[in-house]
Image (cartoon, helix red, strand yellow):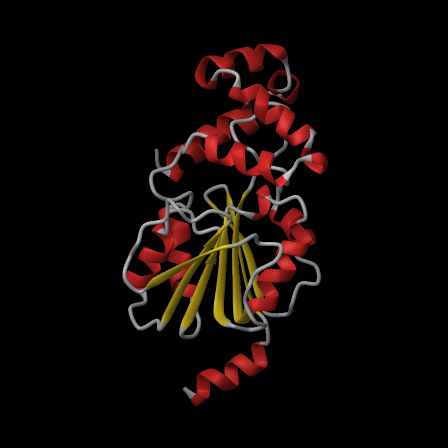
Length: 242
């Protein structure tokens, strides 16, 4: 299923179905007809979030059904990401199978270094010119400013300590940070293992504090697309020199 399709389904479930119904046992029963007991496991997963072990966290994600074909990103978000890449090196945090990195490589063939990071990379596609590193987003094994552009799509909503995760993205980025999260509301029973919910673009901007002067934050088909330039004046000088 493509992201564009699930976004239409999310519109009905999140914006049309009333909250009291969405949190009810009736909705739980209906959702169970699709995903069985996994719906209840997801609700328990969120309730126990502060107390989960690393093993429990990893086990749920390994067993979670893969909904999208290749990537959680829509074509519109992929196009925006490729257009906003700066510099010669890109790191995709939460790379999954590596689909987004392969699309970036095709769109920006002059890139010198492409790196994908996930807590497990054994199912990532072994593509030439792309390296993979297994690591947690809260503690990335890279030097300060090691990558020109750092991309992180559909990850922040999964991370309990999302402020530490965002700090790490900014730490290893030299020029630009790009983040995509779903624009969604929290309900007891959902089809995803998310911890953090951002119903509006300004909801996400609160998570990004302090927001730099050079940034953009917009809605793209029910996803929030955020892009910041870490030092706009220095970057302008760099572009001029190039």
